[in-house]
Length: 79
Image 1 (cartoon, one colour):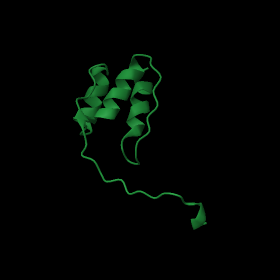
Image 2: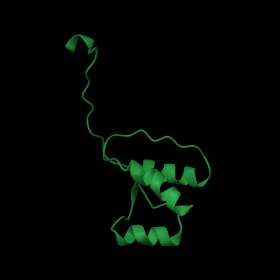
Image 3: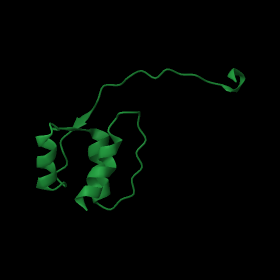
Image 4: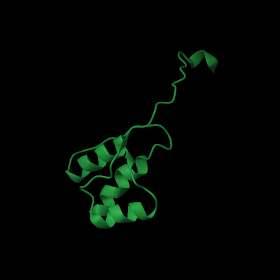
């Protein structure tokens, strides 16, 4: 099996880049997020949510536990 592996690379962690909760979200959603302790988002979350709410197609590919679920669940809840 190891004969099939052609490359292994460790990718170091990067410092998170945060954004404000998108203003495009309804006040009800923003209040709910703040209520559960979400005061900011990762930049990829905010960007993808804004794009989705504008009707754009969005694909998000990030590491495990990076918040992808909010990227698609919040726009769905808004609709």
